[in-house]
Length: 116
Image (cartoon, rainbow, N blue to C red; front, side, top):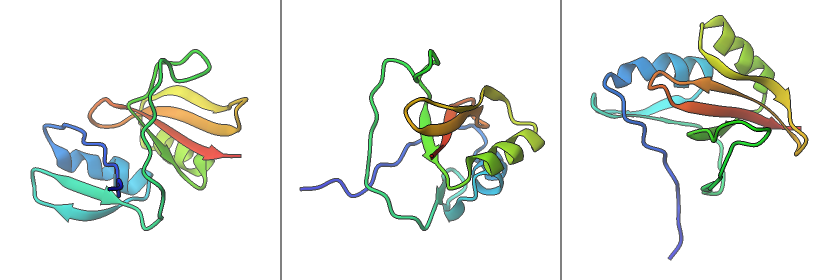
């Protein structure tokens, strides 16, 4: 038996509002839209992971999810330009990531990061 994929499920009253954030800002593609559920995906392949934490590091609250991108600076600028709420500014962390926290349309804290 092996885990093939891990998918965070985010409850939203109006899932269509997620398009501007997950598609336009983060660059994910809509792979399923049933009206009541929209699934966004990337063509990248990654191993399934689950992080369990007491905090988010650097004295931040634990985020609801983490999304690794290839250019965190570009995503940060898109999020700022779109008026997204940045709750932890773009930072180079001592453990080798550059990241920021942003609220998604459901109010979830998303840790957007790139490895340096």
